[in-house]
Image 1 (cartoon, each protein chain N blue to C red):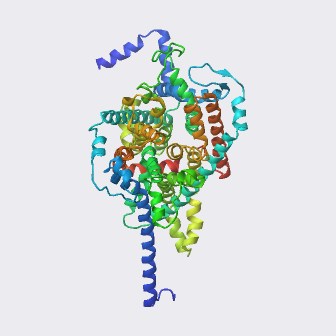
Image 2: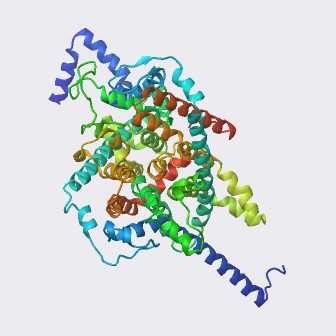
Image 3: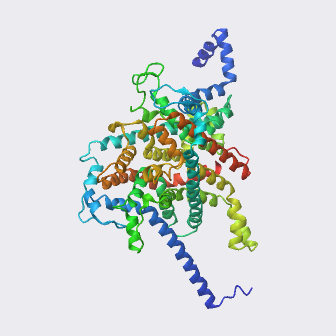
Length: 314
Length: 311
């Protein structure tokens, strides 16, 4: 008891201004705690993540080559160059079509895979694990494997063609095949991810709906068309948006497998920006390019949400 | 009603088509599995060759070395390559550091955004989400400049002039991108689906907010925290990009970045690249992830599913 008395008398003895403060503190206790907990995270975030983001938007307005050289303001010159010089728009277009190919394969094969992996068969768990394995592998380790497969002297791909009685292909000098290999690699790595997303969607559909349809005498196709597909609406937005954002940023396989070969026809936009930034240290141009990519991605994301009529934010 | 009365022939026909269907399903699943696992088998086989043998052997789908040599695997474990221990150590240190920071920040921030009411909550959270939607290229160049011009680091003065800043220093591997917005988002979602009763009971018993977060909420939210830990761990273990652009000193490189540097050199250089060695290193990079994934895959798949459906 003595302890409690002591405490009361102590807080009662504090001077007037402190009492006002303690009253304020008691009214806003939750907010103060929240801000105390969140402010270190927020401060870090503002310095290391928000500031570079904002800085990136201004970078495009400067002529800035090399870290040492002081930047020169050049207005919209970098942005004009982005639209004037065909290689940027071409690179954007390439990212778009290579990315779309990857996305089509991923979504299609991933969906078929998810349907199969959702069937009640033996060894389902093992198959799910194996299909997901490429997703957790490093792009560094696996894309160099694909590079070795198409290597002219030691590559397996040509050997297989020979054994099938076909003429070997010089992969590195064929635009079609380089694009194909990038798509093959990206799909190899991405199908498992998309399949698990579709799987999650399939499992979120209430089984009662299928039972009800069974009682009403619906066939397998009708069930698929009227229950499965509408039930996958939410997940399909997620798959589309993340798939497209990821596909447009296709970069690792280009850097490790094709390096823009042949004749720059697989040079995608992120690879172009990376070359501006890390090859030429042309920060202004890299900044302008990044801003354009960000705008494209934001427009696409908003458009998808609008088109598919989802009201939620994100 | 005629449907129920089956003749023997139609029953066998149904059984046969069922079997065919099942066989077809297994065929596709197994074919897919072979495709997904093939590079790993190939890598294991090639790892047993040296580079001359690899170049001399005619390529085949699964090359069987005529003489087995384990020099590549020995090198992977650090025998005859003094840098390997740094590569592994750096990878472990980096992944461990990021995992612990991201799990704690996701837990605390996710709880705060879900449960506490405070001024500016919605605005701050919306800002975080927007920044997470931006592609990482947007901040690639500006972050590099900021790191190079960071005040008072490596000979830089207060205005960030004169030195090299964080370029090619060890801390740059540990200070970038520490806030995992997706983790905070998932944690917040998970908090919303948790009844508030536990926390209120604890608060009545006199527990403070930190105590509630770490002793009440954290054990309950173990699955989502495990998901955040495993995915960030694998992501950081596999991340080659940041070290690739910031680090030139071999001793500071994590394994993934070391491989990326070797690969990009191997493509450019003339002569015979040591593919078996690079492949073996890639295998050494992949295997820990595979083991971790095989062990925790339930968390990963469930976490991804909940992220996809709720997010």
